[in-house]
Structure formats: structure tokens, C-alpha cells
Image (cartoon, rainbow, N blue to C red; front, side, top):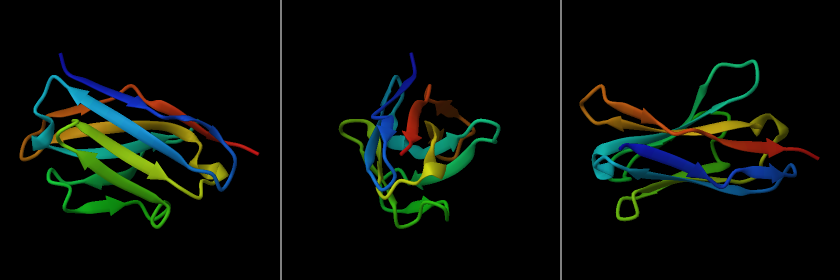
Length: 118
């Protein structure tokens, strides 16, 4: 059974930090591009960051560049999102996604809530 389980969400003040984790199981994690998305109430789900299968290349949405860092550990089958200098507008449910390289296979996690509030 394929699972992507996010954790690490919570409530933090503006300027604070959180580290999200997404653990994969039931599929060959190291062959999947891993991405983070987020969705705020009333808005469409948006891309946040992505990392290639070997962790060698990373990409970020302009809104999070310089503040967020994506990384992965293929031994632990986990992808991380380190979020620093959080802003009110970063409040959202954060989802991880696995995309099979060269395929149209994709899996989504259930999401974890991040709330930035003063």
C-alpha cells in the first residue's frame, strides 16, 4: 500500500521556522521526484518546491526562494521542507507529492497544516 505521510506542521509566529517531513512507503522512493505543494482556503493548490531523484537539483516557487529548503534522504525514504522566516501568507495545508520519473504515476500525501499567526 502506497503511503506518503506528512508531519511537522503546526502554529508559529511570523519570522519563525518549521520543518516538514514526508515519509514514503509502498513504492521505490529513490525513483521518484519529490515535490511540496500548498493550498490556502479559497485558493488553488500551488507548487512550493521540488527535488530530483538524487537530490542534485532543487527548484522553488518565487514566493519561498531564500526562505525554504527542500531536501531528501533516500535511505530514510523521506523528503523534508525546512521553512524559515515564515510569513502570514505561508499559512496553508502543505502536501507532498511523488512523481515517477518518466511515468505519469503520482502519489499525494494527506497534508499537514501550517499556520503562521501573531
